[in-house]
Length: 478
Image 1 (spheres, helix red, strand yellow):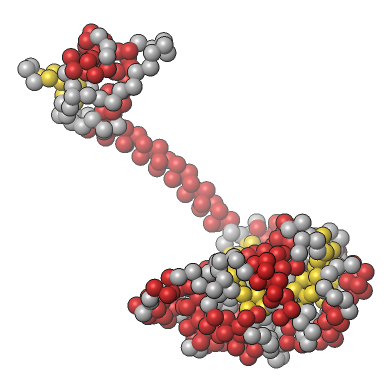
Image 2 (cartoon, rainbow, N blue to C red):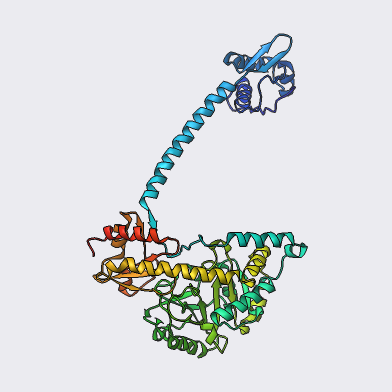
C-alpha cells in the first residue's frame, strides 16, 4: 500500500500527526486495515499528504507504542494482529445485545402473560385455509405466465376477475351488475378515495353512530362534512336522515358494525326511497361480514333491491378469505361510470395482476365456495359454543348481535361502564373490546355499557378457558 485516503483538516486546532494517527487506528479497529497489511512508508505518505515527514513519523511512533502496528527492519510498517481486541469488543457488544434481549424477553413475557386470550372482533381463523390449494394455483399460474400478465392491465382490474366477482355477487348476494361496473382495489381505503373523486369534494355524508371508525376517518380526510345519526333496532333512523341534509349515506345493512343490527326490508325500502327523492343522492352499502349468517336465510344485499342506480356497493375478501389478500371491490351504478372514467380512469390498479389471477381461479374453480361453507360451519360452532359458555352472565347482561358476523355484544343491565369491565378482564389476562371505539359524538348511552367478544380466531378450548377467567374477572358483577 502506497497511500491512505486521509483528509487532513487544517485550522481545527488538532495536530496533523494526531489526525493521521486517529485515522489509521480507526481503520485497524474496524478491520479495514487487516493483519499483516503493509502501511505506506513515512516518506511516501508524507509526500502524498503534503506534510513534513516528521509529522508522519510522530503518528507512526504513537501507533507503534500502542501496539497497532509493528516495524520490520528493511521491510516497513505492518498492521499487528488485533483479533483478540476484536473478540473482546464483540463480546462487549454481544453482552449488551443479550442484556437488551433479556430485557425485551422479560417485557414480551409480561405482555404475553398479560393477554392470554384475545377476543378480538376483527380476527379470523386461518387454521382451515387451503394453503396447498393456494400454492398449487400460484405455481400453475407462474408456470403458464407470459409477458401479458406482467403488463399494467386495466385500471379497474382484470376483466376475467371482475366477471367472476360479478357472478359470485349475483349468486350469493343478489347483486345485479356488469363487469364494467366493478372496480378492484387493494383495500377499502383506496376504493373510498376513488369515490371521493367520483362524488366530488363538497359532500355531506350521513353515518350510523356507532359506526366503522376507519371509514369515518377516511371521509374526514376528504374534508367531507359528516352527520352522525342515531340508530334504532332497525338501523339508521330515517327521520334524522331526512333532517340531516346529507347527499350520501354510508350504511351496513346486512350486519352493521359494531352493533350487529340486520336491517329489515322495510327500512331498506325507506333508504332507497330517500335516495330516489333527490338527484345526486346515493347510498354506500358496505357489505360487512355478509357471508357469515347462522340463522335463517341469507339476507340479500341492499343493491339487489335498487332499481334506480342509487346504491354504491362495497365489499372485500379480507374476512372471507384472508386479510393479507387485500382485495376489495366497488360496484358503481351505471350513471356514475362516466364520472369514474373522467376523474379516476388514469389511476393504475393497486392489485397485482398475479394476485388477481390467483383469486380468479380460486373463486371460479369452486375452492372459495367450499372454503366459505367450511368456515361458516366452523364459525357457527364457535358462535354457539360461546353463547353456551355465556349463560352464567344472562342475569347481568343482555346479548345482541348474535346469529351473524364474528362477535357478540354484551350490554350490562346495571349500567356498569364498559371501561370498568375491560379493565377487570385485563387483570385476568383477557382482552375484550368496547363499543366506545366506534362511538363518535352524542350516542345512545347503552353503548357506554357494552363490550364486544369476538370468537373468530379462538378455538373452543380457548373460548372455554377465556370465559372461565372472565367469570373470575366479573365475579362481582354476576
